[in-house]
Image (cartoon, rainbow, N blue to C red; front, side, top):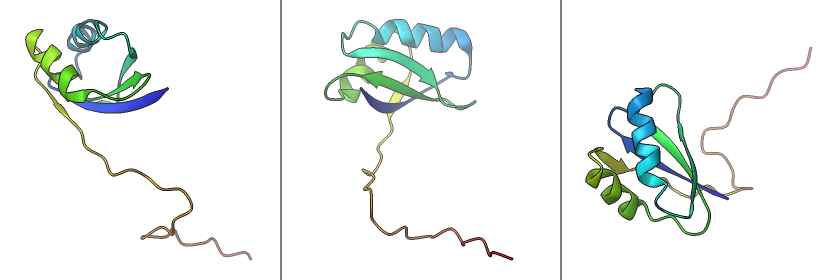
Length: 90
């Protein structure tokens, strides 16, 4: 299972998010679409490779304005550039 993010205008509204979900369910790889907090961003759970530009186009056809959210890939085991201070033991 993979997760991608989309910014869907109006996704804070339940009806808008529901309409976006149904528009995206035409893609067999999409398993679910979740709102992220109270924002206009949504997490798209999918199998296989992401196709965010195809998804955004389908949303536009359904009347939902959306854009992709690009993220840098995370790497495990790399030093954190802004380390969290360690708690002091008393």
